[in-house]
Image (tube, rainbow, N blue to C red; front, side, top):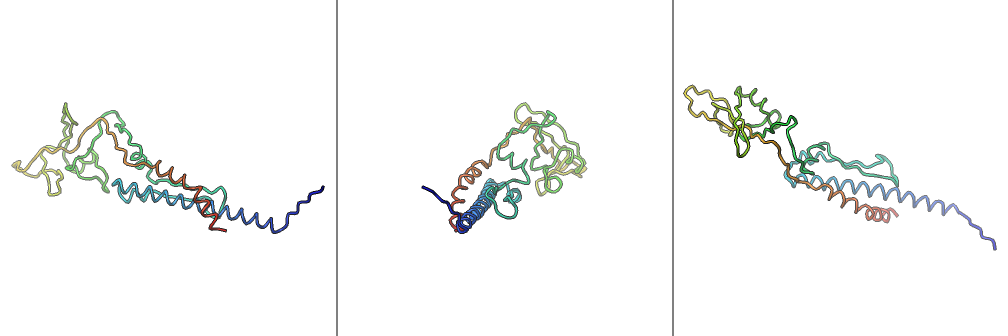
Length: 209
């Protein structure tokens, strides 16, 4: 008995079309999974009260950047990885030099461009020296003597010669370490996006036929 296999041009074309459909399906699935994960992470960040600006630091990109491939992949990342990562892991933060962390009170106000102000910057801006106050219980303090509280609740240098309305204002709380609360669970959304990929590939493959 002799068997003969004939590969006709139609079969070759059909196989090529199927491969092309697969490339489109995988690429579309990865693009959809990446975009969905980006949206989920952004929603988590805004829902945790961390602001739209930090949420918009989440970006996504599908590879290859142009064309389609059975090896397509999606990358989702943050342009502010240190901040996002800290809220995702809830780390214990200690001072770099082994002393205290200075946490500004409401009376301290804000630094340049809305950033958290430092003790040195506060002294330069207000022309007042901060005094260290040790407390056995609770955080120690950096306070400003001969200050007054303005209408915004911030401490400024008092110009009064009589001492009227002068106060000693707590400007910074001093603590040895701070445990940042975990406010995000990025792994959860990433795992859900990964689990959706097979179904997305099948759905896009069927649609491409």
